[in-house]
Length: 266
Image 1 (tube, rainbow, N blue to C red):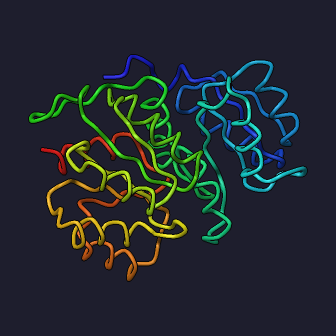
Image 2 (image 1 turned 45 degrees about the vertical axis):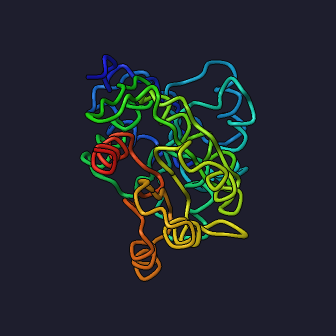
């Protein structure tokens, strides 16, 4: 079990509304969290993070000087701050608006308004990232597990790689899109035990990648885990028919990925 408790988290809360700021702080305090700093805009948030890095940044989508997506990009431009978990609190539901921040590797997206159960689950996911527990598989040595990660977003690749690293999986190869993924995999299929892929990618998307591996290459046994922000049920059904082993939402919780790995690998 993680040794870090939710109550020990230090949080930077970015919220332009003073009323909402007080409401969210009250929710966090009921979770036992006392180390909370509140700011109202992105510039102050970046200044605070560069002065003292928090365990978690929680932010609204629309700030006076930038969006949460721009704030995430600004945070991750610094090598020192790249691994700070980011949680979005927003009533935004538009896929095109939310997809870039999902791709950036947020730990959770909480709706406005959210309840204590939503918050507690997202905070537990944060703790799993900060204080990870290595996974144990019955039929694989986790340290020698070989994984191919395919995603056109460099931030998403880094986020997925970090989550896998936290589980004890370090032998990871990355590909920038589906075409490069099948080229790498095709060179030596025996070099990998697992493929983790995005769905929406240029040149060759995740469904085409899976179909190529299953049908054109005739490889029906390697587990393929899709991590995607796609919400269209018809498209996801087509992915399942193409031969995916499991589908995980973006943003994803480390515990969810662990459970899926247990299922598809064992």
